[in-house]
Length: 125
Image (tube, rainbow, N blue to C red; front, side, top):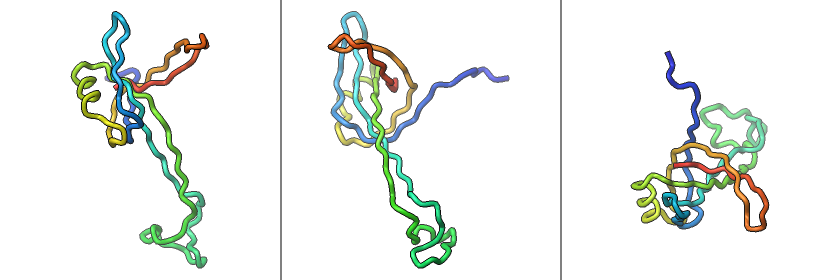
C-alpha cells in the first residue's frame, strides 16, 4: 500500500551566485531569495582507446585521454519561506558558498516592469 501518489522533490549542490536578499510583499510572509549554480561535467568522446591506440583497461581509464571535458552551468532561483531557515540563510549564506539545497520545484507566472507576462521556475527550500 503506497500513500504517496506523486512526488515533487529536488536536491541541488552548488555555489551561491549572489548574497541572499530578503523581500516582503505587503500582507505576506518575508522570503529569502538567492541564485545557485550547479555544474555538470562530461567527456566528449566515447572511445576507450588511449592516445597510442591501445585499449584502456577499466581500472586505468583515468590515465587515458578519452576526449575533452565539457561543462554546463545551470542557474537556479531559490526561495526560502520557513522562518528559521529563511533567517539563517539570509544571515550566513554568502556569494560563493557551496551549499546543499533540498526542496520542491514551483512554476509560476508574473508580470514584469514592462507589463509583459513571464514564466519563472523556482526551487522552494
